[in-house]
Every structure is written in C-alpha cells, then in structure tokens.
Amino acid sequence: MGATFGLAEFGFLLSGLRWTLLLSVIAFVGGGLVGLAVALARTGTSAVLRRATAGYIAVFQGTPLLMQLFVVYYGLGLIGLQVPAWAAVAIGFTLNASAFLGEIWRGAIQAVPSGQSEAATALGIRYPARMRHIVLPQAFRIAQPATVGYLVQLIKGTSLAAIVGFIELARAGQIVSNQTYQPILVFGVVGALYFVLCWPLSLYSARLETRFAANAR
Image (cartoon, rainbow, N blue to C red; front, side, top):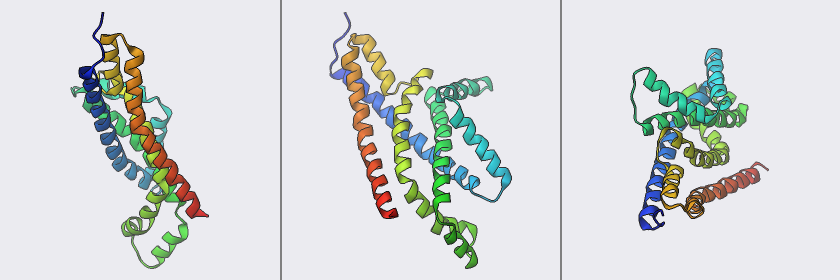
C-alpha cells in the first residue's frame, strides 16, 4: 500500500508549482529579450539578418519542443559543458520562446501604419528613437493579446521539462502519484493548479483582444 495523499504530498506539488512558475518567468523574460532582437532584425533593412532570423524562427517553430530540450541538455554535455537540468531547460525554453515571441512582435511591428515611420524619418528622427518612441509602444499594445496567450501555452508547456529530470508541477504529480497510487486525485489537484494559473491569463488575453478589436473600429 502506498502513502495517502496529505499535506506533505500537497506541499511537494506546490514545490513543483514554484519551479513551474520560475521556469515560465525565466523563459518568458529571456525569450522576450531575445525575441525583441529577432523581431527588430526581421523588420530591419539588413537582408542577411532577415534571412538569418527567418531561419532561426523556422527551426524552433518547425521542430518539437521536446526534441529541442533533448538537444540542449545532451548537446551541452557533448561539448563538455555540464549544466544542471534546470539550467538546460531554461535555455531550451528561452530559445523556443524567443522564436515565437519574435514572430508575434514582428507581426505587431509591421501592423503599425508605415506612414508614421515615414513621417518620423522625414522629421529627421533616427531609427533607434523612431522604434523606441513611435513604433514599439504601438506594436506592444497590438501584440498584448497574442503575447499573453503565448504565456499560457508556455506555462503548460513547461511540463515537458520533466523529460530531462527537472521536477516541475507535472513531474511532481507523477512522483506523488507513484507513491500514493491515487492518480485520479493527484492529477486532479495538478490540473486544478494549472487551471488556477492559466485561466485568469486566458480571460485577460480574451479581454485584451476584445478591447483591441473595439479600438480598431
């Protein structure tokens, strides 16, 4: 007979939840910074950078995230870099997030009316100031619904980190389930915790999308 599901087991799930949140924040922030650079390169004037970043996006959007985590985790080991599982999955998720966020923000930048950039150029405003003060503030507002929606997918996607031994919420649930032999109860609690995290974000994304559609009329 296994142990019963109690406060200790629930505390272990909350510990996994903490790592899920931490991994999501690292991937979202790191992916956002790299994704912004990707988006700027994709919309810039350099044909070489446009092609390179288009290939970068194609690789990460066209291959399974699970495979990307394997490549990062075992690939770093092959070149002599021994990193803990949490660092490997953080790198893998950051790279993956940067490709998706970069493409989201590229579309948002291109959705800003080109006449505004042309007017700024005519006034002698240089590219960095033009992007910082005119284009990017509008682009980020346009991209908000899709960005929040992607964050929901990112949180749920962290469950794949368990494949390399990282103990996040889903992996913690599997461990507790194996100890208690109560998979329905354990994964019901795990699902409820994911729901508490993701449902408010999904509502917020839908609200942003409705507001943006209303403002666009």
